[in-house]
Image (cartoon, rainbow, N blue to C red; front, side):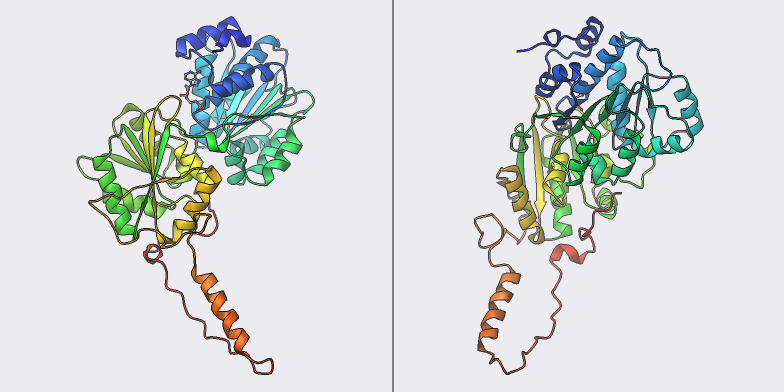
Length: 445
Ligand code: AMP
């Protein structure tokens, strides 16, 4: 097994690593640190929990130590999609930089702008933050990236999903791509616009796919439970939280309304939980996460955006109240459990209208989820009667309708006017009736 000293890291960093209890590099650290120290641009596919933060922080610190500080401007910049992630990254930077003279500062929304600007004027070596707040500082003329040595785009896929691509490109354009090194990390291949981002920001990047999709989450058991309607989902979640063995659990919902409603349904004297979504303010979010980390509470009900990038150790149960909208979203959710050496359980509740989505996620992950029945709350829906080879439901209403139409068309003579059947309103699936349907367009909360 490689150890950190074999990677050519500075003595002061090795000391901090020993103190942090990092004995050996994780696979992403073993793969990325050497080429990053050699100055290569990198495009790394690795999930949260793989140790990717240290994989870019260590080479960043070493390069800053190697290059004497003659300049006034920022020397390294880390852009991330959320405040929490920025705060967690700052904590790791401070931990690993404790025996160096390198200083880092947080630049995120939710903090006093003027105080932040004053701190930035004291020339910290590293700035860590979210693109939106940096753009505000750009407008106020507070940024000097002209001498940037290193740019890191962390969770780049999430930044693109959140529509931050333009801001990221603007900020990257403030420094010289020839003079700086750029490292891009993402948990998934990301949306189509990832290609454009890579082409315009990275220079002949080395690609490192440390976690291929199918290799992810081998420490996590993945189960599905078929469900009838919202009430059935609520009963199941309540039962699972009362009967599963776990240390910390997170329940994901697709909408804020459902998160609030479920939080209300589940709360009782023996189950303390917090509900996190985009409408909760920064103070509340921080309190919720601190209390979960300390073990004061054991359950978080959250929407995807609210929970993005959280690093909570001991999270061993993830419940998908609704099926996430894509394979990547699924990976982000369950990537929070079964981390580095520990085991986890991910349970997805699947209604009739979500079966095909679930099957396509299975295909994307090249994994089969384990079906499970909770005897206490069995439900009527047991999955489609017949399956196609893809795992999707066979004989969907659409194809039956097509078949029928083709037969009718055959009977009608060329001269006769075609009878258009009156449009029949399709009944909403049970789950949609309560008004908690998955919105068609993804709206960040
Ligand atoms: P990350 O993927 O960067 O969010 O890291 C996930 C967790 O793994 C963090 O809590 C780190 O402190 C921890 N970690 C990172 N690298 C190592 C390592 N080499 N050994 C042990 N723990 C690590």
